Length: 246
Image (cartoon, rainbow, N blue to C red):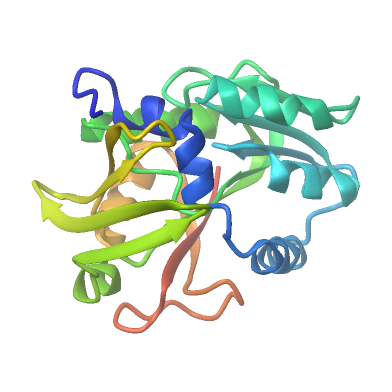
């Protein structure tokens, strides 16, 4: 069921059906993307890295295996509880809302990957989140925000589709609604009860992000367009990957 009084990501990200629906995400592609970023950014050994909106912590774990001191934070208590089984002295996980100050010290790099931004109802909340991230960067530190290329996403929006995973059929519809790309997910759960959730991501343009960065005291250094770190092309690129500096 949909809980309109609760922010959509709080109920949906803690649902086991969220993880079921997205369980086939390409982990090898994600690792290759992270490797490319580490090389591109010349991340030094033993750098402190914050994985902002880390989910179940798979990418935080991968970064820690590369030798970095990693802190992963996410709004979902269930995801963080799962992630904490992988923790060690250089890998820590915390439940945290990015709209609140980050009390974990300063970081050399902050990664916000795989469209984990633009969820909030009020645009000012996005700027607040970026300001707190900027405050958590060391002088000269860098932040990476990996977002969909909104222009191309809207042009190629798949309005209706079905996906069956482990016997659960998800009916998925998409629409543009008041500046948000809204994905509605309907299905019968394992008990046969009808369930409905929504994902709402603000349809942010390159210009929106440029304004956000300026208001948050961050400087845009580079915009990349795909997970191979090719140049950004508004019409063709699948992603907008922002490299910003404090």
